[in-house]
Length: 187
Image 1: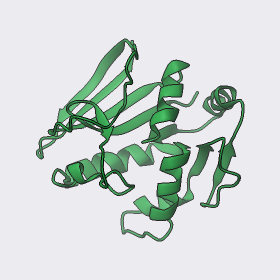
Image 2: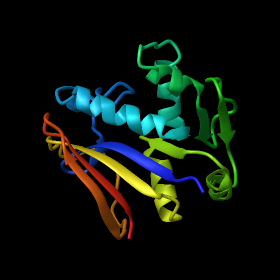
Image 3: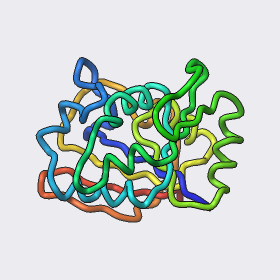
Image 4: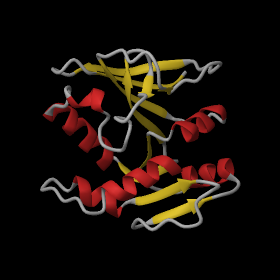
């Protein structure tokens, strides 16, 4: 069975999308100062351990604008553009980015079906509302949280008020830039 892996950039106070103009689909402004080759390698390895992405509408629309024209020597952009993308939305009528499919109804059942197919991990980046739905239905198998040494004070949080979860830490790693990886699985 495939795993659903939620991968997020978070501030120390749990914000995944800060307020203001820097929460577009580039790396958020608050993450830029902490980028490093070792974080890049971690994200590369994470992407190449997966063969599909599960995305909410807003994240999909940002990625679909940002990725199709990109190229790099390591093949990251080719992987992003070539892998299967499942987009959860009740408002989109079509999805144009290469290898994208739309999930408009029976979301939980469709995601359970995708998990049951053979293959590698299914990555979920951003997509706050979708992630909260996945958490509500116990569909997340692993969290990859890159925690940045900043406090934003407000913004969209990964764990909304009232969220409850028992998690088991399976890996922690500090990067030289001060970013910390926390990898959790449901307890």
